[in-house]
Amino acid sequence: KELGIKDSPELHAQDTLKGGDYKGDPAVVETMTHGALPAAEWLKNTVGIKYEPHNLFLFGGNSVKRALIPVGQTGTEYITKLSALAQKEKIPVVTGMKAVALIKNKEGRVVGVSCESNGKKYDFYAKGGIILATGGFGANAAMVKKYNPSLDERFKTTDASGTTGEALYMAQKAGAELVNMQYIQTYLICDPISGVIELIADARFDGAILGKRFVEELQRRDVISHAIVDQPGSYCYVLWNDNIGKISNTVKVHPEEYETFTKQGVMHTADNLKEVADFFKIPYDNLKATVDRVSQMAKDGGKDLDFHNRGGLKDLSTGKYYIIKAVPSIHHTMGGVRINPKAEALDKNGKPVPGLYAAGEVTGCTHGTNRLGGNAYTDIMVFGRIAGQQAAQAAQAAK
Image 1 (cartoon, rainbow, N blue to C red):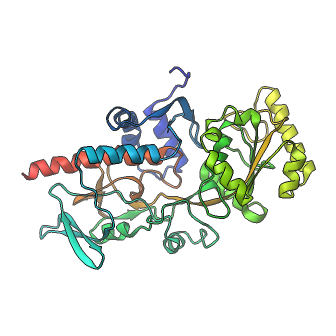
Image 2: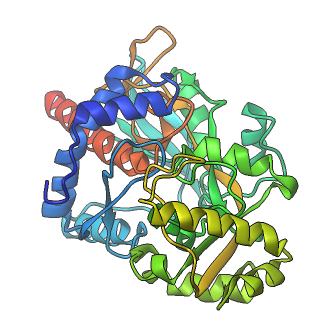
Image 3: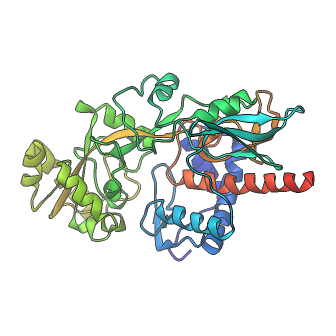
């Protein structure tokens, strides 16, 4: 309210469904958007997550600024605080353990997980049920190509190396239906060498432009990614100046990226546009024409007459300038286990698989064809809490 932003769970749901081309399950989406604020309050007040004050992001495809940003602007704040809370509550966390199959009892209820570690087999049992929260399959190149052949060997990934999708087949073998597996999202601005996200280039949320502009900088991730792949060489440049750098917390909180990407030669800082053009062998006249056009529209009120940038344009007429080369990388798999609003895994007939719950990227009916920025954390936190509550209630009933 202090920022003058008008938002609601209904508008959030509308944006989410539209952003996924209406392939998401409306009931699941509405559960997520209505659970977003309570989940954020729980994270802040119970887990101890600290958010940047008065700094909301307008991620692509959203109508308004609505994404809360943790201090440091990475997942570290969540991981450290959730780990500390688990330790405080004496919740055992077993590492170095590979899950290989779900265990069912003779009544057909999922009651445990069969695992392996160092050649030995271990079975873990649970009274309330098993919750899958294993993420997607973005780091499994063969699986990605199987479900979406257009995303072939050219694409690296932003995902952790363990995001390989075996739990999806475990769930399927236990009776759960997999849906929307072909919908795989790339993150548009990534390192051409390693594939990791170039977080510093999120300066586009504050006015940075995509080189010789060819798409709105705040469009949906899939739209921008496809537009980049269609460019000669399938890459783009992100350009901003000190006017943007001084107001962008995104630039300020990632000094290590500045050093790393500069050392790799994919990022450069220059006092004038001629140096920028010379470093990456960009036609100077084209670059200057683009910057002059953007700067003039910024001076005329910021309205983007060319690509309708919903955040408004910023003046780029003076340096210092910062430029980084970028490519899309595999980022999020929208498909997975079909669930209902209670986070229960469903079979092909829409019936719950007894004892099996799922939350987050391992599920497949929330985001449709495309996930909006900010909705991954929302998804896992909202449905992770619901799944936990459901399993706890089932455990109580089993006593």
